[in-house]
Structures are given as structure tokens and as C-alpha cells.
Length: 96
Image 1 (cartoon, rainbow, N blue to C red):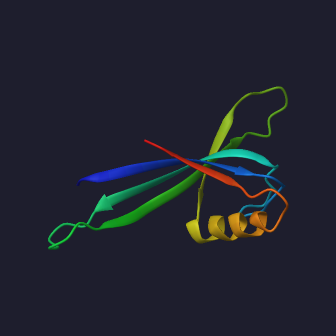
Image 2 (image 1 turned 120 degrees about the horizontal axis):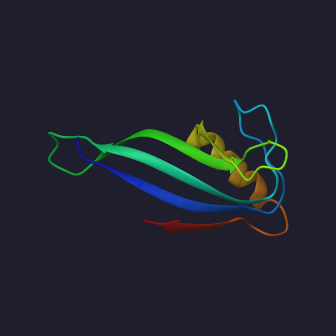
């Protein structure tokens, strides 16, 4: 299986929520990773999304631990759209 991983830093200017996640995310920059696999046997290059995750600080007293949550990319787009309604739009930087 051939695949690719895309990483993005997304900055939110205000707190936000994602469906399926019980807690509210603070404003700030979050690392989002998308893993995709190549769909073989086609006459063109196409990928199927396997997982999208977001990294956030763990809620452990005095810890710098991070936790990674699997999220629905549609919910992330909704959160980005809602944040863009605020005064300062979110910034998205892609990295490899």
C-alpha cells in the first residue's frame, strides 16, 4: 500500500468545538494530520482518506503531554468556517 501523510498547523482565534469531542478546544494553533492511501488500478492518481487527527494538550495537571484525537474532517472545516466569522481569520500552514 502506497500512501501519504499531510500535516497542517491551523490557528484558531477563538475557542471552538468539534462534534464527537466532549471538551471545548482553546484558541491557539493545532497540528492536524491526514493519512491517505493510494487507490490502485485507476488510470489517474487518487487517494482515499484513512484518518484525520488533531493534536491537543492533555488535561493533566502539571504535564506537557499531548493527546491525539481522531476527528471527522468535515467537523474541522465547520470549526474553521465558524472561526473565520470572527475578527481575525484562522491561518493554515501546510508542512511535509
